[in-house]
Length: 589
Ligand SMILES: Nc1ncnc2c1ncn2[C@@H]1O[C@H](COP(=O)(O)OP(=O)(O)OP(=O)(O)O)[C@@H](O)[C@H]1O
Image (cartoon, rainbow, N blue to C red; front, side, top):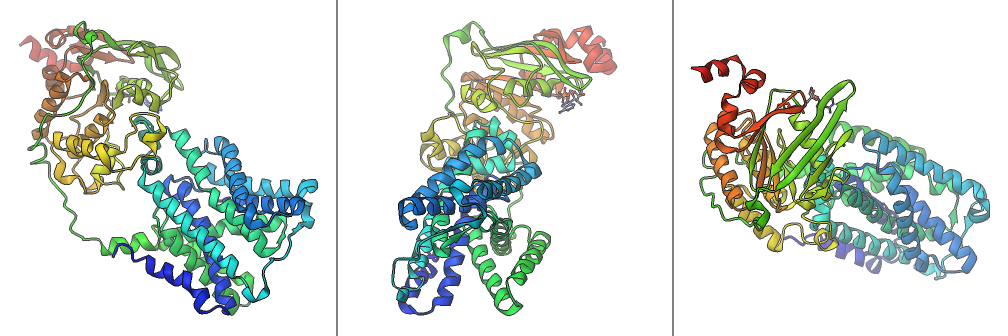
């Protein structure tokens, strides 16, 4: 059943054999294959990674011009020049990606359109190479007219199969999971070790190779190239429309969409009175899809078919089966001496006129569970952001394990053993619980990146960690269906996949069912006994005083006291600044 797609594929392969003289349907189909190649490729950067390119047909144009220019100068057949077209498209993506992928959202979309139009201008004006607006005429196909378009048919069909296979392979790797993580929450992805810069540039390159190859074949099919045709916006709009109709971010959505759009466009041209009606149809379809089918056909159908009885759970029972049997870093000899694992020296962060962190110094000894408490807005989360690299400090230094880290990107800090959880959980909602736990990238090696997303010892370890936090039975549920407290525990399991030396917990008990708080403390203690150091921001003062030692008190962006809980509990400065009059009265009673 799973290989049902082989049936239509076999049909497509056999069609020209069975009906060799059906030239028109063959042409419609080969153009659908071409569109599918582009939509499936576009989906890698814009569906998986969420960076919507509206200029992707530029890479078809690059491939076309490569084949055209090489053909004119060397006589090389465009089919043979196709790999070169793919390589040129990838090189173009590599050069442009480093620049355009700095932008996000609308800015990225606009830049990609600008890019397409810029290429049109270059192709028009670089006459010596491209023959300018006069264009390039290629040799006619060498085969007999009896074969019609059959060679083009198979060329584009094979490319489509290759592009789908490539996209499926990417989706199955940790690289693919990393792209989805970037789409859902780029900051979080970086925090769990995903080198977002490398992932995005690589995805951009992957999304152009088959498009460039297809461009070479398309130039041969048309036998004529000019800048307006090769770098027109309509081609890009059609790609986006195909992926949106079928379902962006899915494997088969762009394929289904490409066939639907190509066939609908053909019908509009034939019965609607010419190619203008095709443009009108695309415009109307784009509006309708965005308004009424935002997820696309396949995801909408899948949602209808999916069982409506997703198991929403309460928090009771979670952790019941928890076993503290988890692999954590080897305790180091320095631990015994309470060596500083993290040192923040004079860190400052300003937001306009507001000084959120004001020359703060903080030391976290290896092997400790250090607390960071303080009133709302005193700068605790901002300090976390400076330590993990989510924000850059305006001044000061941060050292971790004897290495200065304040200029390193967040993922490198993660690879060094710095993990964090968030005040408001930031799981990847479209992934299952298990997929979330295997998503982190513990290092920057290519081997890790290309490893299976949910396979081998990584998956075993993720299951072990889910057992550790007591959530094994939710492994295959969507992360978003779990209760808030359970999501916090999944986030902890996710961080543990990085094998961290230090975990920064941002309000671990916030919003969590009180019955879980005690268990959460046990989990933290269990991990600490095995060598993991913790820095905990928490408003639940009784919990902090019971769990942590030392306790650092933050006020107005810097520490005002530090010591064991017994001292902090009765320190008048702390009582005044943070615990308030009520606590002062309690302490005095
Ligand atoms: N991105 C930002 N832009 C502007 N101001 C910010 C930003 N992030 C934090 N702030 C401000 O910096 C100050 C410190 O905020 P921060 O969230 O670090 O405090 P906190 O101690 O973690 O508070 P809470 O306990 O409520 O989470 C606050 O006044 C906050 O409004």
